[in-house]
Amino acid sequence: MSLTERDKKYIWHPLKQHQTHPDSLGIVKAKGCILTDENGNEYIDAISSWYTCMFGHCNDYIINKVHHQMQQLDQIMFSDFTHPPAVELSEKLINILPENQAKIFFNDNGSTSVEAAIKMVLQYYFNRGDKRTVFVAFENGFHGDTFGAMSTSGLSVYNGPFEEFLMDVKRIPTPNGVNHTDILQQLEKITAENKVAAFIYEPLVQGAAGMKIHSVEGLNEILSFCKSKSIITIADEVMTGFGKTGRNFASDYMVTKPDIICLSKALTGGMVPMGITSCTQDIYEAFLSSDISKGFFHCHTYAANPIACAASIASIELLESKEIQQNIKKISDAHELFSERIKKHSKVNSTRQIGVILAIDIDTNMERYGALRDILLKSFMKEGVFLRPLGNTIYIQVPYVIDMILLEKVYNTIEKVLDTL
Image (cartoon, rainbow, N blue to C red):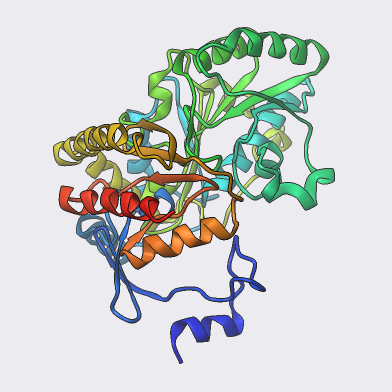
């Protein structure tokens, strides 16, 4: 039996309606930018497997670091112990994070990094005797699938059955360069009528919404307003972090820095799961007390797993290398040129780009997981390119190690498939 057939016997896949889509392609190998299926067919991974493998699959530098760590220390509970990779990783992260970040809290994926941030905020106010329970978030944002993260997300395709169980979240539009005055007026009204605890946002790019890009200046105005009202700001950099926007973090574009930052995905270069929630010294100090109950009693068994820490250290070292920084620039420049080219296509409505992220909106209405989306996905795969449209948006987020020949194949494949629509 093939992997696809064996898979169907026991496995329940995420984001999938098994009644209508029972098959899953068996991938047996990945190296650099190339995925290989069980029949030997190869595909360019043009979305870095959900933006994780930004340094390429099975990167030798990360593998060697992880292999060395596996022979020293595999796993140790983190509530009572520390270890060299955790300490080194925290030092490296603080060195590249926005300058106001002071403490590193370990968890194990993007959703749990957001979950920890939400609990930090709620307990921060609780510890200070100032109960605040309302959050502000962008419309159509996405922050994860655990309950707190899901509450702050605005994509109802994921949240529908759970709406009545979610937290109280007030939603505002993303700033587009001309509407930030209206947004600030909305925020004035929200803060006057509610005890707002925090504003959580995907800085500059809303990933799951279709790589929607918003205004730097507008977001900075919103963050400045929140700071003036003593509202904690949470930057969800799970998708945007580690070079994807052209800078180490999207928050680097703003003058006003977030109080809390959530990290995952490319943190480990896709090698193993890891999540981190960083925060300011002020947030951390609100949990210091002779009263044990004021401590942050939130823990994941695999928090600060030494192997994951080793992968993260290697990823940061790669990110800071001259070669990777040059590659990010080359990809960004190539995207800019292709964006100008593809926007002239009769089937393209608009394009947008920041760093290595390029999004193309097709001039048609289509469901997020509808028939046309499936046709596009299959057409791309037939051409040997893995692209996964979000509704009518085709987006590219290739590994930093891709060569220009393979990147041009991605571009040509998009044009070829659009020609068939």
